[in-house]
Length: 81
Image 1: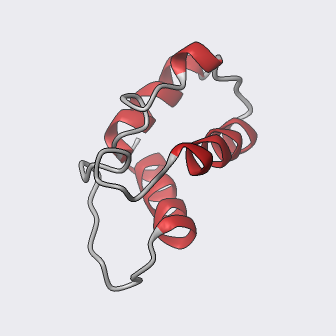
Image 2: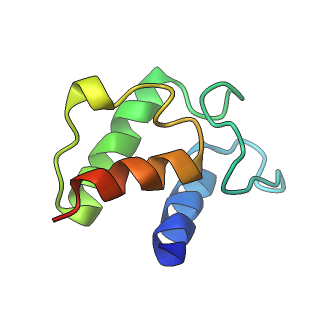
């Protein structure tokens, strides 16, 4: 699980942080904190689906479910076989 958290955190840092020196953690608010917007959430969902060979239903891909790395990992784990 820690490996998945690190992978998701690294992806968020590389793709969405405007300031590379900004510190974020597993529980940093991503959506409500303005780091990830609705368009970015779609690309993050696609990344997760491709990386982990899963399908996340749109109704489960809510801003709340994508608001931190911890919540994203919980969501992904629901759909892993």
